[in-house]
Amino acid sequence: MEEFKKTFEAVQGYLELGMHAEALCELAALEQDAGPRFEVLALRMTVLRDAGQWDAMREVAALIRRMRPGQAETWIWLADATRHSVSLEAAREILTEAEKSFPENPHIKFQIGCYHCRLGELGPAERYVRAAIALDRRWNQIARGDDDVRELWPSLAADPAGGE
Image (cartoon, rainbow, N blue to C red; front, side):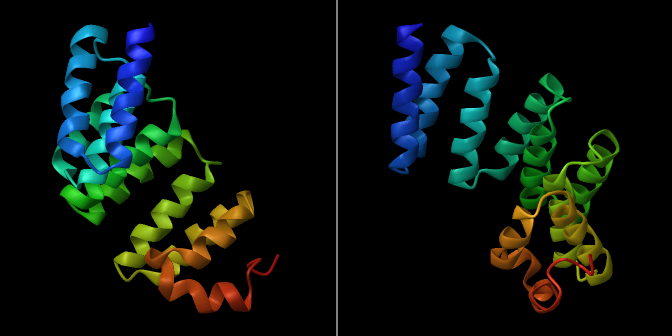
């Protein structure tokens, strides 16, 4: 267990330094010893995301989502990788499916809103972003700083509560 912790910390250190190849090498050794543990796969996915290796990240995120389909963030991770490696539409489909299982998750709603906005679909984008804000007011501040929903900033500033 101590060896696992040391290697895990080394990978995190490499990641902080932007040394992706070294981090992935350490992870490979860790995976060989520990097998496909959730924590190890999540860290691999984080390294791949930071390195911009979207196809590889999508593969790992898909595995993680299969391991823990009842965890909303695993769907969001897969959608994020899919957005960058396939398309915004494919990513939105993943989260639209996830929304059925997690109808009260503001992060999923916000991300769907982001994808709509990036696709120029401002009506649905605003509805989803406002739904996220209604579930958790913190998403209002997040929305005001997220370039994916830049087109919504004026309406969010004018009526941040959405008429509530």
